Image (cartoon, rainbow, N blue to C red):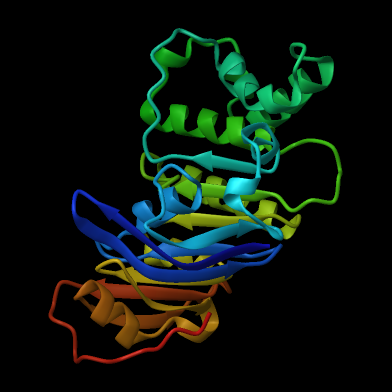
Length: 273
């Protein structure tokens, strides 16, 4: 289980995250939503240890994050950052094998290569395994990096929960590959992982997530199961646009239609999770 308790982050004298809590249980796919500057990526970086906490605590399982060694946490927690600069001409397969480093002290094994190729296959990049990573498009690189962290989470079946964190994982992808990536994330959750992702697309978040955490100005607006928290007032007040929620006739769930018109009115919501 993931337990984030009232964390705050202060950087450059500004409080970017202010007392936000979150609980993630095995099987949860939690999407973090909010307008630009809401603190979404900062919150994710604080939870994953990239940014120091100014207050609060983070637990993975029954242990606070600081009690895990780097090697130990790397076997159960994988992070896909918003930007990852890799300037060496590695082959695509070599990039994915980097994800196996926590599991391979004495060099890659046949199992590591198999896991890496399976991860590439899952993101539709196995045919490019020998390509120079630097020659790929932005979207292709994003899919390779996803394969890397998927390979990282494959290991011994030791009964420990796995944690997958994604910061805007579909930003450089076309619609088909956006759905592919989020479908893979949802499958990780169904397999028992806690998945937390920052997204900007409300419709993708409604379609794939089991839970939402909505932030605004560094504070939690609301959190809970999507079916309980998604509403027209929430979308309008959070994003400042007029909204309408429709039912997808194909059975795909809810569709949120928005326009640039001013919202119809203000509202207030309280934290549920």
